[in-house]
Length: 325
Image (cartoon, rainbow, N blue to C red; front, side, top):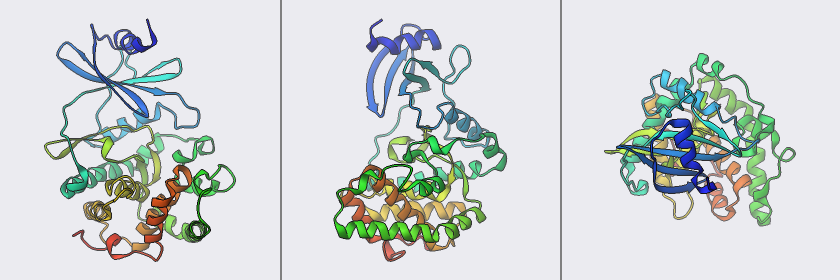
C-alpha cells in the first residue's frame, strides 16, 4: 500500500472500519484525516514519535482520570479492535476520535465565548487537583523533555545551561536588558509565588495547550477539549495565563485584544472562587508565560512589547482583582 494510503490500512486493520473513505486532510503539527465509514464520521490523527516529549500514552490516562472526575468536555477516544487507545506504527502514533459538527467561531469578537472557554477550563483544574488522580499518573523524567514541555519549576531550573535560549539572539541591548531583568525578578520571587500557588492548591493536571484551536464549540458551548498531548501536572495559573494570552489572540500578538485576556482571567477566577487571588501571583505567571515563549519561540518584537506592558506590575487592563468589564 502506498505511504499516502497508510491511514486506510490503520483504519481497516486496527479499528475494523469497512471501506473507509477520506473526506479531507488537515495538518497542524499532526496530520488529521477526516474519514467516513457508513454513516459514521471520524478523525484519524497521525502524530510523529519524539523522544523529548511526554510519553504518548500519558494523555489517554489523563483523559480517563478527568472523565472519571466528571469532566464532560473530555471524550474517550475510539478504541482499537484490541481495546487500545492508539496504534504505534513505524515513526508514528495513530488514534481516532469521533467527529462531531462544530460552529465556526471568531473568538476575537465574541467575549461571551471567551468567558465560556474560561468556564470550561475550571472543571479540568478542579478534577485535576485531586491528589489520587495526580498520584495515579506516576512520575516523568522532566530533564529529558524539550523546554516547551517542562513544568514551570524545571523550566526555570534549566534556563541558561540545560537548553539554548534560541529566542534572544536578535534582541536589541535595551530589549535584552528588559528580558534579563524580568528573568531575575521571576527567579527572585519564584519561591514565594510557587509556594503561594501550592498553598492555594493550584497545582494539578493542566492542559498546557488550551487555546481556540483545541476547543470544539456547538451552540456557543464548549462541547469538547482536544489535543491532550502536552497535558501533565503543573501550576494551574500557568495554564490560565497561557490560555488568557491565547484568547487575547495568539499570545496577544498581531493587534491583540488584551481586554480578552482580562475577560478570560476574570471569568476563570470568579468560577473557581478565586476573586481575591493576590494580584502578584497572576502577574508573575503572565510574565513567566511571555518569557518562556520568547525564549523558545522568538517573535521578539511583539513579545517584548507585551513584556514591557507588564513590567511595572498589574496594570488596569490586566488587573484580575475585579470583575472583567
